[in-house]
Image 1 (cartoon, rainbow, N blue to C red):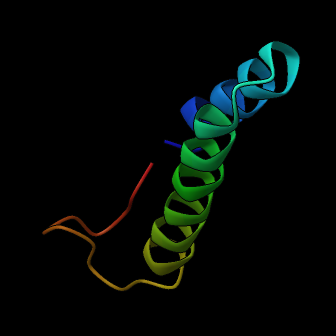
Image 2: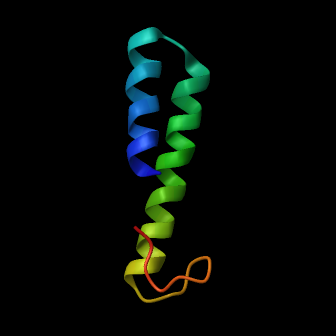
Length: 51
């Protein structure tokens, strides 16, 4: 999810499409939150680790 967000950020920046930029930021933020929750041992979506 983080990688997809970064890809959308780059495409949005290069192409000048603001909606891709916004979606990319949201995906990166959600991915980082899920990654942190999984790293501290909190079960995310029924999984012990998220990656």
